[in-house]
Length: 67
Image (cartoon, rainbow, N blue to C red; front, side):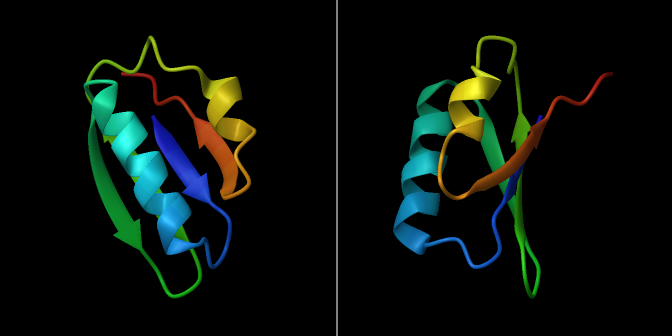
């Protein structure tokens, strides 16, 4: 699963989202570009509610990656 953040997402919101995801038992790999940040979630993401994450102010999109 990847979480695409809004451009210039606030650091506090990013840290809170990262902590929440990690508490779900998933590792987070952050890729930061000049305008946008992408979070790659590694582990079993089947129990994570995509709709809940999409509602967050800093989130632009969420995508499940099929293996």
